[in-house]
Structures are given as C-alpha cells and as structure tokens.
Image (cartoon, rainbow, N blue to C red; front, top):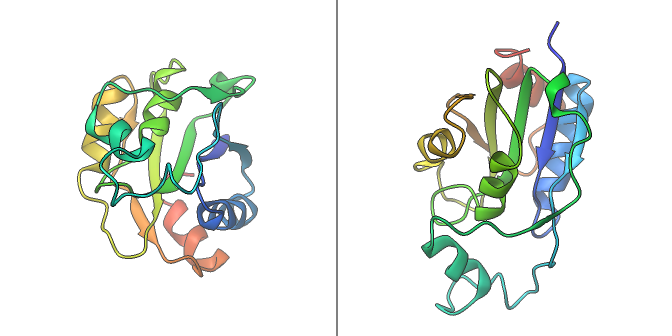
Length: 158
C-alpha cells in the first residue's frame, strides 16, 4: 500500500475544504502550502495586471516563498497536489513546492478547484517543473465533491 500525502495551497479556503475531505477519504497525511507572505485580496485580483498573482503567473520562473516544509517527503509514494486553477494552470507557489524537494519516482496527482476554468496545461506544466516525478493527468473538482467521488478518483494511484 502506498504512503500518500495531500499537499494543498488554498487562497480563499475552497481548496482547503476539498483537500481535507480528500485526505479523510483516502486516509492520507495532509500538508498546507502556506505562502511566506500571505496573499491579500488585492494580490488575488486577476483583473489587475499589476496584482501579485498576475505578475507571478506571467513569469514562469517566479517562485513565491513557502513558510514550512514537509518533514520527510521521501516517505510518500503519491502526492495529491491541490490548488485553485490560476490562468489555466497551477499557481506559481505550487511550482515552488515542487522545486523544494527531490520528487524522483513519486507520482504527483494534480487536484484543482475553480469557478469554471478547466485544468488547461496544468499536468504538462507541473511535469516540466518536476521532471523526475510522474505527473499524471489531474482533475478539477466542484467544491462540494463528496468523499466517495474523491476516493474513487484517488483509487487509481493508491
């Protein structure tokens, strides 16, 4: 049986709720990816070309700092990485998370929340950041996805 982690970034609390349900459903450890400098409402205003989130997403090399680390990433075989979709891909802070560890041989499963955007280029983008990992095709879930739906999805990898 695989050792599983749900690592998540939540800007508004929506992804946190989904991640907690997923971790319960699959009996996984959970880790919150917390930005060292918290995002403000103005930072998250995607309609403002000068907002922090817009600036970060336009620069693929941007790596916002994370407060805290997973103690022993080596113990995990599968890492469900949950986040809100920003500009049809993972937020830059997810790239920081992926860059922070040796993920060789790990299976990374993108799990997203969004008001309507699809996964876009998420899996390919994450694979380019973590080339030694196996980034599989992820899925966007509705905020009200129940534990059974999450467990069924996750069962492919655990």
